[in-house]
Amino acid sequence: MVEQLWSIDRYFEFVLLLLFSTGLAFQIPVIQMLLGLLGIVSSQQMLSGWRYVVLGGAILGAVLTPSTDPLTQSLLAGAVLGLYFGGTGLVKLLGR
Image 1: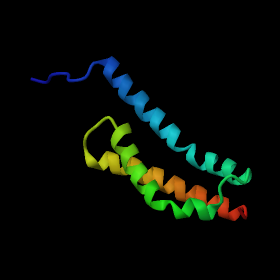
Image 2: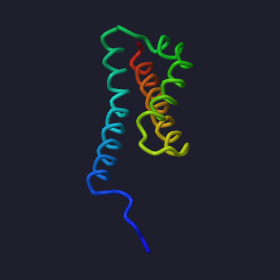
Image 3: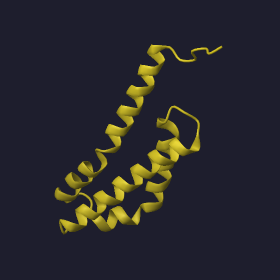
């Protein structure tokens, strides 16, 4: 016999949380470009704090993913790190 574990409301909350966290993560390079263009932070300063970014990505992955499996958390943390370092590269290309 198969039992339904999630209600439709709980499923929509899960999907909305994933959409929100992914959308928030994809704003990282945009914020970096704005900070770089305004001269607030340089690409060198962004790269100097890479340890904090790795720690923050791991924490964000653990907090924002609704499941407890480490694969999903690692994928979100990896996406955040990739977007951060990609944004740093774009700021460096701008010459800031």
